[in-house]
Amino acid sequence: MLLGLAVVSGCPSVARFNTARPLEKGRVELTVAPALSGPSDGYEVESSGEPYSGSARGINWIPSVDIEARYGMTSRLDGAVTLRNMATALGVDLKLGLASGRAGAVSLDPGVQAGLDGGFLSFDVPLLVDFSASRAVTLAFALQYTGLWIVDGGLEHLVGGSFGVEIVVTEFLRVQPYVSIFVWLDPPDPEYTGRFFSGGMAFKLPL
Image (cartoon, rainbow, N blue to C red; front, side):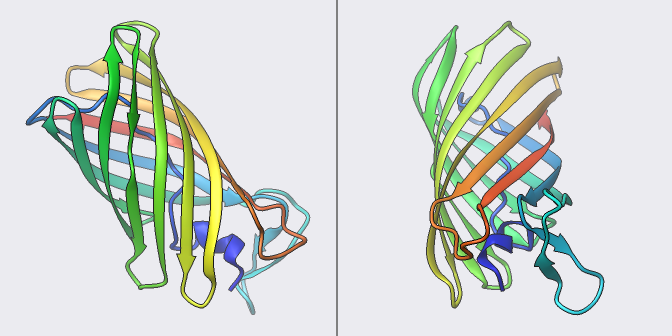
C-alpha cells in the first residue's frame, strides 16, 4: 500500500472545518461535512487489478463525509467525537481557547484519529485563528501538524493548513465552505510530491 494514498482510503481526514471559538458551556453542535479529497501529482483509481497506480493526471477527487458532535465543557474548552472518511475512521479532539474577543479568537485543538479497521493512528495538533468579519461571518484559519502511524509503514509527518468562511444562516444553522492542503514532509515514494487536498461544505446545527 502506498502511504501517500492513505489519507483518502480510510485513513486520516484532512478536512478542517472548525472555528477557533469554543462552544458555550452546555451547548451541543452537530456537523455534517461532505467533501472531495484527493492526493496530487500521481495517483489514479483503477477499476481492475491494483486499486491505485501511478499517473500524471493531477488530482483524483474522492467523495467523503465527516459527521461530528461537539459539546461545550467550559467557557474555554469544548470537545468532539467525529466519524471521518465515510465512517471508516473515528476522531476525538479537545479545543482549548487561548484568546477571545470581538475581533476573533485563537485556540489549540489537539486530536487523535484511528482507522476502524486498525490500519492507522494519527495525532493532530492544529492552531486555529478566527477573524470576525461581521456578526454573521467568521474567517477561520488553521495551521496543523499531523503525525501519522500506519501499520507496517512506520511514523510519517505532515504539515498543512486550511481556510474557511463560517456564515450564520439562522439561529439553528451555520455553513462553512472550506479548503485544506497538507504536505508530506518525507514522501515514501520519491516520485510523489506528497500534497493532499480537501474541499467541502460543513453544515453546522447548534442545539
